[in-house]
Length: 141
Image (cartoon, rainbow, N blue to C red; front, top):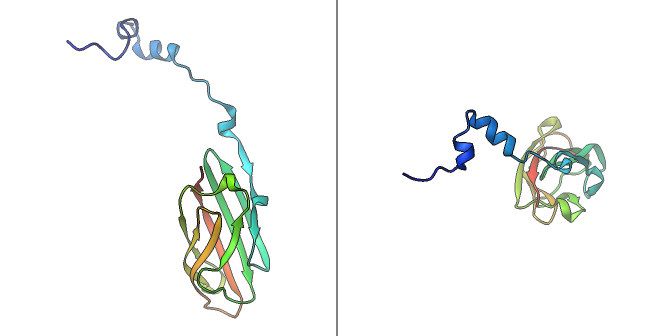
């Protein structure tokens, strides 16, 4: 008969679950639960005005909410924002949908591994002002 995965003392305990918990190390570092405001680590390279720009890092993820506009539409591949702290660069490229005021949109906004937030195939459906809204999260290394 194969040896049980649990030690003999745990395997033969009257209450196996309690015996396992009594021997478990459930200590968790408080640093894993710290939410860090990294909004100042995102530089505006395109918009005239940021209506909202906030970013928070938590447990290996960055959550972003960015809203801004410019008086002229961007061209394909324009960098809208830059993550200035390389500690928060994404582990791979991430793609976010964007649709904003007056139906302005883009195929997507890409966040690159070098920290650039680039708009791909923007469409300006309203007046000459282009609006952008980005909400989402990504994993960083």
